Length: 110
Image 1 (cartoon, helix red, strand yellow):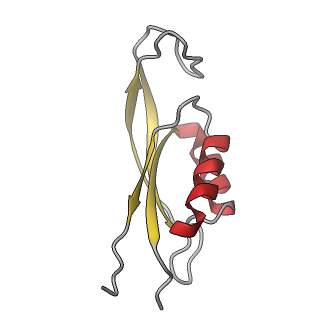
Image 2 (cartoon, helix red, strand yellow):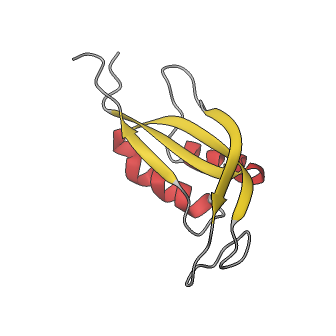
C-alpha cells in the first residue's frame, strides 16, 4: 500500500534530550512505518558549535567552542505532516537553533 509522499527527518540533540524530542515529533505524526509506530534510528556522536554574538546558548558560552555528546536521530514521516513535525521538533528541542534536515523520499511505485 502506498502511504503517499514521505520524508526522512534527521536531527541532532544532546543525549539527555533525545527522548523528549522524539515523543514530541511522534505525537505530531512522525515515526510510522507500515504497521509500526515510534520508529527511529539513533546513533551517538559528538557535535560541536561556537556561539557568536547574539546567541543565547543553552550549553556553553558565547565565543567558546563547545563539544557535546549528541544523538543523530532519523525518522520517517508523511510529507503532509512536515510542517507539524518540524514545529514540534523546534518546540521540544532544548537548543536555540536545532540542527536538522529533511530529505524527500522517492516514490517507490515510480
